[in-house]
Length: 97
Image 1: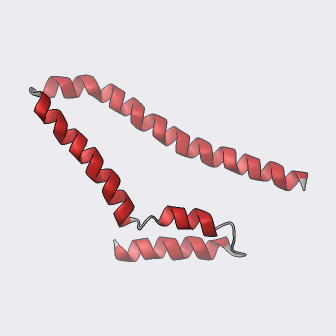
Image 2: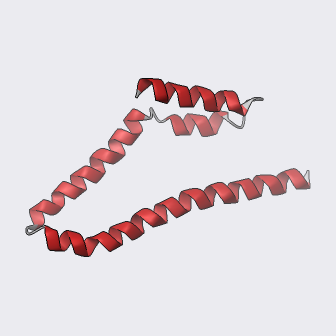
């Protein structure tokens, strides 16, 4: 029981680290690119282009993946064969996009 619980906590920590690192890297890149963007863009109206791009990217990621990650994380722990959940999600997205 305790070993299984430790494995779950280690798995959770590993997954959290992966998602956390990607979030930190994106924010760090934004921080590094700010001086370049302020140099390249002459007017403040041009900054709206970047904001629009980020907004459309977030919306399209949800639409193009069908919110599949939420369903994947919900059902992967409930199935006896988690590989079948992974394969279904993967091939559905692969064939439709």
